[in-house]
Structures are given as C-alpha cells and as structure tokens.
Length: 63
Image 1 (cartoon, helix red, strand yellow):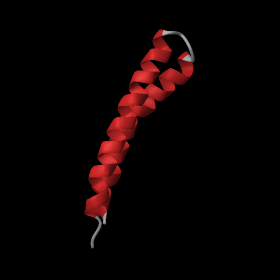
Image 2 (cartoon, rainbow, N blue to C red; image 1 turned 180 degrees about the vertical axis):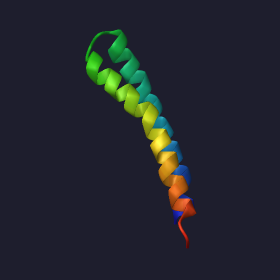
Image 3 (cartoon, helix red, strand yellow; image 1 turned 120 degrees about the horizontal axis):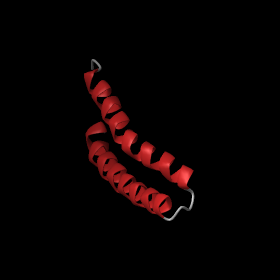
C-alpha cells in the first residue's frame, strides 16, 4: 500500500508546494499579506525536507 501512495504523495506535494511558493512570492511582492507570504514561503521550503525525513524514518523501521 505504501508503495502505491508514495508517488502520489510526491506528486501532490510538489504541485501544492509549487503553487504555494508562487502565491507567497506574489503576496510578498504586491505587499498584500507580506507576513503571511513570508510564513507560507518558509513553510513551503521546509515541508519537503520534513516529508523526506519522515519517509526515510518510516523506511528504516523494521518490518
């Protein structure tokens, strides 16, 4: 089951992450919600790292 969901997880995370990065840059540049844009940009950059760490930890668990 995990083998089937992993590619979907990566694809969905990449699409949503890219969209969030674009939206937060627009918010920062247009000075509309600058604070929320910065927070969203930081989270969009940190989220893939956290996802990778969790994935690797799950793969290291004994079966």
